[in-house]
Length: 296
Image 1 (spheres, helix red, strand yellow):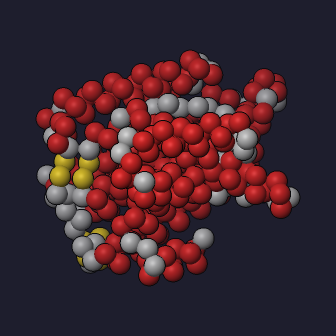
Image 2 (tube, rainbow, N blue to C red; image 1 turned 90 degrees about the horizontal axis):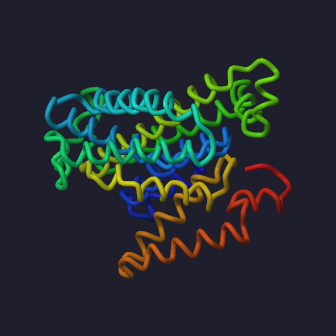
Image 3 (cartoon, one colour; image 1 turned 45 degrees about the vertical axis):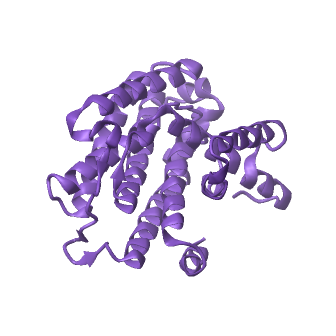
């Protein structure tokens, strides 16, 4: 994957690759929750969008440097994840999903009405600035390198989390929660930590996306964005390491190269969703891993 990321900007438009990487990190963060804990959140766009708005406001209005603006955005998503998670993990299944969706919609209407978000216009012309006061992010290749480093850092953090004792407990909760409780684990605490970590990494993806496109908009907090990340994780393969990355590549590529179809892109995505559910339930990487008899 690293070799592909090094070679990609010489063959593909860098902005497109950076968009894919931002959504790939978002999908990986979501997959940590649904693929390894078994919690389906329908409101994960709240963390992506909230971090985007705070990062954009901090960079444009407060004049913070990019790294401080990103930290502010990630911290906001982490705190928001702590609040939402503390309320949502009290329930399971569809009730958990509906609570996350309801709270995310509350944030959407807040962003629509709040004066600092710009309403339907969003926050535009967000300055990229200089990273650590030295690295000029207005240069496209420099920005690309920074985005790749952020993505790889987030990806490796998720990889390490999954393969740690903490990650093993999360898998135990997913497979048999009553059994994990009987072994003495505080299941709710583990769920909450995983939820906050997923929210923070989603915020990192949103903050990075804002610097790439210099725009924070309502699209990032809309319920449709929460649906898109579910589709990315499902297409790539739930509970796999590289699955969300593959899913993000497929979905973002479809949106980009089929843009001339307009609203029909949604229909194409729906057909892919149905095919995955009916025929390829393990997703791209899950099926590939089954054929090669090794995990991905």
